[in-house]
Length: 112
Length: 115
Image: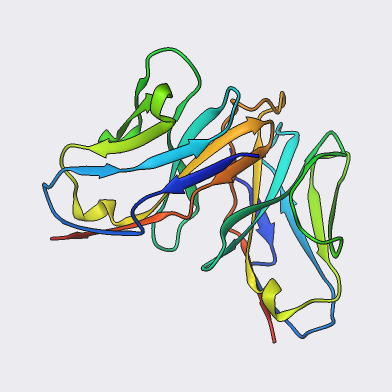
């Protein structure tokens, strides 16, 4: 069975600080990896995804993530956060079509 | 292109009742998945339908059921509601192939409150 662990439940940063959110997954086979964001009062939106190839993937709004197969990790990064990045972030893995397994989410608060 | 729509957006029910939630996927999408989101359990997968067939199922009791129509619209039903069923129910659709690498597009959810 797949499982996803997000290490930080709540992160508080000041604007311009760098961000790294940890995500580790457990699954023996090939998985596809995703980061989603949920801004206050809005739908879940895809930030970025990894299927194969270059382990460093870039997404929207300056976010990127690195897939490290040996560590079963897919950490999300952003060099300089903005107040508008305040949201909840979810890491997800998908091995079976249509079924995503999500982490518990990390709430990011960016102080202006 | 219109996004995923879910109706109703809010529902209040009492214990023991049943409820039906509806999801209209993005035009052309044939895979529809349902998730339950709660503060304590996070986002949990309920089931997925593809071409009117249930293709994947999560670990929820049989009180939770669903179906998909020929136009890809989907409904989920919860019978004999319990207080613990209070949650945000999210629907997600993905591209026709329904492959695991296709992005899922999420709707706004239906907020169900069970009293």
